[in-house]
Image (tube, rainbow, N blue to C red; front, side, top):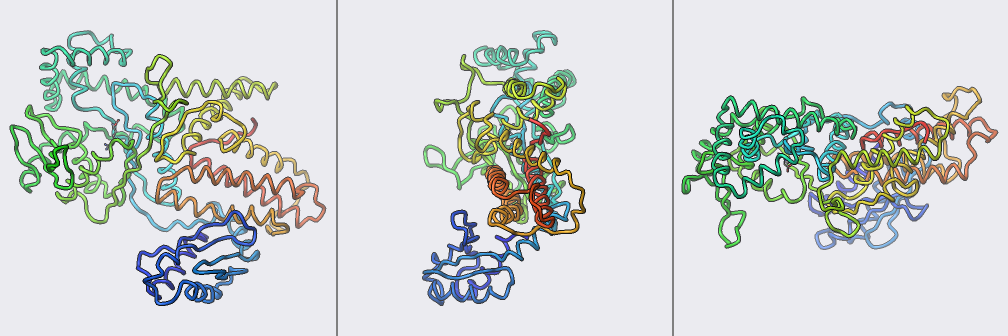
Length: 571
Ligand code: ARG
C-alpha cells in the first residue's frame, strides 16, 4: 500500500472540486518529529486565492470526507490549511502482515512500460576512469528499480566507438605495430599529441574517419580490435562493480552508422537542416549562440564526417521506432545537458519521437577531492576506476582481517569484495546525484553513519538474532502486532518502502533509498534496544517480534539489492 499516493489521489480529487488547478499537489509528507502525527498535508494554503473555500474550511472538509476510510486514528485540521494524520494501529498491522506474507512486499506490479536506460556508455580505446562510476551505478539502480516494478527494461550501453578518436588511433596504428596498444592510454596520448600539431597526421586522420564510416576493410579491422580490447577491460570492471550490464546491452555509436546518411537527407527534406559552406547545419531558434543569434548545430562536416549529435539523432529514432520506448533515460554528467536538449529539440521537429515518449536526462555532478578540486591522483592524473575499486577492496580486507581471525582466506576475499565495492557505491549513491561530492575514504568505509558497512552490519546483526532463536514454533500461529511505540515506528517505516521505490522509479534518486535504509536500521536498533525479542515470555509477542525482525532484514536486503549492493553473513 502506497500511503502517500493513496492520500494524494483522494485529497487532490476533493481539492479540485473546490477550485484548485488540475495539477494541484497537496504535498503530503511523512512526519518524523512528532509521534502523534504520521503524515502532514502542507500544500493547500498555496492555492488560497483560487479556492471556493478558505484553506481552513477546505481542510476541515477534507478531514471529514476522509474519515470514511478506516485507516485513520486521527485526521484533523489544526490550523489554516494544514491537515495532520495519524494512522490506526490495526490498519498498519493489516498491511504489515500482508507485506510479510508476500514475496514482493505486497507492492503492486501493474504497468508494463518500455524503459530504455542509457548508462555507463564509456568511450572506447580509453580506460574507464572515476568519472564513469556515477553514470554506471546510477543507471544500474534505475534499471533494477524499473525491473522490480514490472517495467520492461532495455539497457543500452552507448559506447563511444566511432568518430575522430578512432581516426587518430587508426592513423597511429598504421604507422606503428599492433603490439604497441597494450597500454592504450599511453598510445592514445601519443597519437593525440601528433594530431594536435602534425598537419600530415591531421589530414590522414580525417581520411581515416571517412574511410571507417565507409567500412574500409583495413580500418574496420583495426577498429574492431581496439573496441574488443576495451570491452574486455571494461567487463572486468562491470563484474567487480556488480552491475547488470552485459555484452548484449552494448549498442554503441557505430551501430547507427547505417542510418546517418538518411538522417541528413531527411532533415534537409523536412527543411530542418540546411547546407552551409559545405557542411550541413540545423539552426535552432530555441538556443542562442554567444552573439545572440540562433545556434547552429552541425550534423555533417565538410569532409562528410558525421557528429555526436547526428548519431544521437539516429539513436533516438531507433529507440522510438524500433524499440518502442515509453521512456528514454540518459545517464550523463550535467555538461551534456545542452547537447541532449538540442538532440531532443531536433528529434521532435523531425517527428522521430512521439508525444508518448518521455525523454529524461538524469544528470549528475562531479566527484571532487577534499579541497573541492576534481578528484585526481597526487600527480594530477585521472584516477582509473579499476584502481579505485581495488583500493577499496584492499581497505575493506584490512578491516575484516582485524575483526575476524578464524575465517578462511577465500571467505575473507569474498566479504572484502562485497564490503569494499558496496562502500564505494553506497557513498556515491547516498549523495543527491545533482550535486558534486567530496571523496573521503574515512567516511566511505566507516561503520558509523549513513554508509554501506553500517547497513550491512545492521543486517548481519538482525540475522544473528533470528538465528539465535532456538525455540521451535510455528510462525503462522501469530501475526505481527504493535505492543510498543518502537514497534509502531518500525512498522510504519517498513510500510513506506513502497513510497520510496515509486519515487526512485519516477526520479532516479537513489540517495532517498540510502536515507531510507539508514532510517530503517536506526529504527530497528531502537526497537531492539527497548523491546526484548528472544527473551520475552509471551509466545504471541515473541513471534510477532521475530517476524518483524525477519521482515526488517528482508527490506534491507531488497533495498541494498536495488542499489546493486550485496549483503554479507558475517563482517
Ligand atoms: N560516450 C559519452 C561520454 O563518454 C556518453 C554517451 C551518453 N549517451 C548518449 N546517447 N549520448 O561522454
